[in-house]
Image (cartoon, rainbow over all chains, first blue to last red; front, side, top):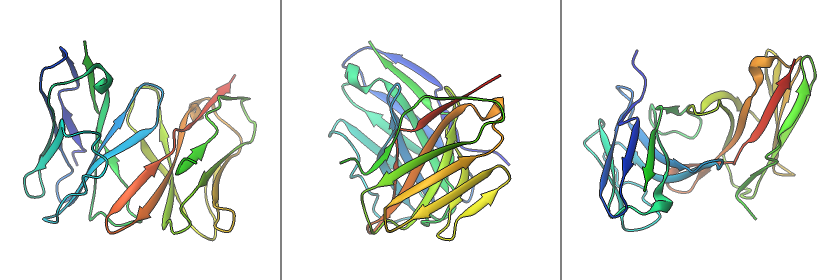
Amino acid sequence: GAGVSQSPSNKVTEKGKDVELRCDPISGHTALYWYRQRLGQGLEFLIYFQGNSAPDKSGLPSDRFSAERTGESVSTLTIQRTQQEDSAVYLCASSFAGGSLETQYFGPGTRLLVL
Amino acid sequence: RKEVEQDPGPFNVPEGATVAFNCTYSNSASQSFFWYRQDCRKEPKLLMSVYSSGNEDGRFTAQLNRASQYISLLIRDSKLSDSATYLCVVNETSGTYKYIFGTGTRLKVLA
């Protein structure tokens, strides 16, 4: 079946502009994660959605970052007033129910470059 | 101290060699452990979960040492296709399921 998809695959924007990144999880997966990976660095947890529970936003680096998820489907990550340090690959992952033993399936990521 | 620490490498090994990576974690209450593989400019993919009793999948063996708070990955008979970055992942269950990723260990298998 279809995997996790993300769009756009690449985004170049100017400092100060807002960007919106989209993630389509695997159908039936209730858990969805957003991560940021800077060049040569590890994955940095941003936010976690599980079903209709309140999301875990503890990883969002500033109030310029926000994310929404409609039910158990599409999620969007919005970065307002982008800064150059926001340049990174933004990875989305989903898992069946968010359990601690589950595999996370990653999308191909959105490469964001802020000029 | 970082929550999950890995030697970044790179580990350059000849084909056929055996190579081992360690990863240490700081939270003794961590529940589950994984090794993911990430190829250059690609997304991470699960290599294997790590069970308390240790587990093996073909040429790959994973071990967990809770007392010393580390996990290991052993690759036997290295192939050129094993060249990648290996990410150690720890699940810290603190109300919600948050996965902490290490920065990865880079492996390059040489012909």
